[in-house]
Length: 397
Image (cartoon, rainbow, N blue to C red):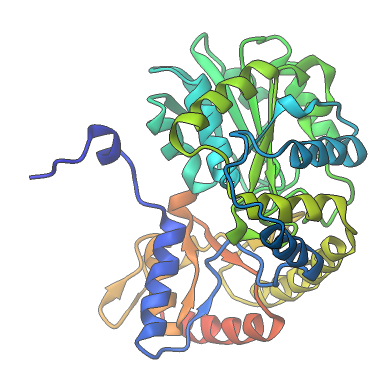
C-alpha cells in the first residue's frame, strides 16, 4: 500500500536525472560511460568567483540571508538586467532561490490555482509539466514541429488561449531543442498576448549567455507585456555554477512578493556563500562567460558534423544552449539481440547499454521522435561517443 500523497503520486520522476543515475550505476560497475545526458557545463567555476566564496567564508557570511537574497546580490542582478537587457527593475522585484528550477516552481505555485491552464510549447524542459501538476493547474501542451524549428507560432498561441489560461512558459534559448526566439518572433507572440491581459508570461532565460546567433532577446523588452512577465535566470549555465544553486526571478512586484512569502515558508533564502559567489559572477569580468560560450560553439560545430553523418538522424542546427535534438524515429521498429526499439526512450536505453553513451529520450520532453544529446563535454568525449553511437546503431535491423 502506498501512503504518499495524491500530489506526489501524480508526479513523474525526472528522466534527465534518472538517466544520469543509470549512467552513474554503470560507471560504478567499471564501464566507461560517456554522459551526453546532463544539462550542466563541464567547466570548473571561474577562479575569481571561487575566491569570492572563500572570502565570504572568511568574512563570516554564515548566517541566514534575507528570504529573497542579499540586497547586494539583488542590486547586482538589477545592474545586470539594465546593462545587458536594457530592463529596469528594483531590488525588491528580484527573488533569489535555490536554482532557477525553484524559481520556476515558486512562480507557478504562487500564481496558478486549481484548474488554471498553463500553455507549454513542446518540446519542453521535463520539469515544467510536473510543476504545473504540483500547482494543481492544467497543462495545455502545444506541439511544435521540426519545420518551425520547434518554436511556437502566434497562431498556435492564439488558438490555445482560453478564459482559463493563467500563464505561458517560454524557454529561449531552449532546453532541449537549442532554438532561440528572435525579436520578431517574440513580437508576434506579444501581439497576441497584449489582447489577453490576464495571461502571465514566464520567460525561462537560464541559457541566455549560451547563444550562437547574436544578442539575446527577452520578451520582457516589450512594454505591452512587461508588467506581467517574469524573467527566470541564474548563474548555473553561463558561469558553470550548477552546484552552487542560485537562480532568481525579476518580476512584477506582486509576484515577487508572493514568491518571497512562499519561499519564506519552505526554504528561506539560498546559501549565503553561494550568493556572494553569484554576486562576484555578475560584478566581475565577463570574459569567462564568452570563453565558455566559444568553447560550446566549437563543440556544437563538431557534434553537428558527427551527428549529420549518422544515417537516420534529422536535426536542426542549435542556436543556443548546449544540446542537439535529432529526430531518430527511423530506428523505431528495428531490433538487436531480441530487443525492439519502440520509442526514443528505448533508443536511449539501447545506446546506454550497448554503446555506453548516455542520452535522454525525447518522450520526456514531449517530443517522442527525438533524442536529446548534450555537448557540455570535451571534444574528445564527443568524438568517441559518436564512434560508439554509429557502431551501435548499425547493429539495429
